Amino acid sequence: MEQITLGKTGITTNKNGFGALPIQRITQDEAVSLVRKAYNAGFTFFDTAISYTDSEIKLGEAFDGMRENVYIATKTPALNADDFWKDLDKTLKSLRTDYVDIYQFHNPSFCPKPGDGTGLYEAALEAKAQGKIRHIGITNHRLAVAEEAIESELYETLQFPFSYLASEKELELVKKCREKNMGFIAMKALSGGLINNSAAAYAYLAQFDNVLPIWGIQRESELDEFISYIDNPPSMTEELKAVIDHDRNELCGEFCRGCGYCMPCPVGIEINNCARMSLMIRRAPSQAQLTPEMQAKMKLIEECLHCGQCREKCPYGLDTPALLEKNYEDYKKILSGEISPK
Image (cartoon, rainbow, N blue to C red; front, side, top):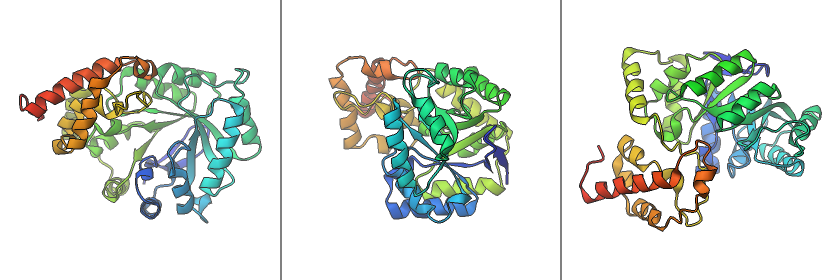
């Protein structure tokens, strides 16, 4: 069973992290059963957030009475000290614990530092001194914030999108984290569902001995796939290299990652799905994207106000309104039979 140590935290875990965002979409009993199955198979690192509705509550029940056997990383979107403490108190109650292994600032637009006027980092230090958190981390989708966090040496872990679609800039982040002995947690290892070959994703990330991928898991079939990799990890074969090269050619560049930070839309457009429809409809069973419900969601693009809010919020600097229009035009051609989704 391959292990990884998250930098100076000293946390050593199986190189399969459990991303607990998707369990908010299933029932309490289903989630508890899924999480415990993951633990019994060898998963020991679980990542959640107070923003993931009831995800923390479900993890709290799953690990009640066995808290010391797992590592839990969670997050706060707080922008000031008061909200930081409110979030932390609520999180500890939800998780049924008196400490969090890694407490992360959740995708802030800036890098919290001592003396910046927010009181956030000072609050994190105090919480650490009180034993309520053991390590301070940060998550982000913005390269500039991630780079600042690494250079500051204030953080013990960085969580950032990383997959085989990564550019040289993301690869440089991984390298810098290694140099600073900073743990690197890879979110979006399947690029928000656009990567549909988990073996290729796993084999690629296995090449980085300082990267811990967290796999977003909702279904037992998904979990079984990753459990099978614990004892029989996929190796980087010529076949998997070909899959990766094909996907890089098709997906790299200006595409929506589905992170959702552009939401909500003033007119209700489901941007994080609609802005990448052209890719989803070609990389997954297309019928799921052609239902009356999905057609109605895509038609909402016609109501776009071009207010620019989504463009301003996008951590990847995408021209989101233009991307929505491009995807909608393609979608209409597919519906009319003018072009095939495959």
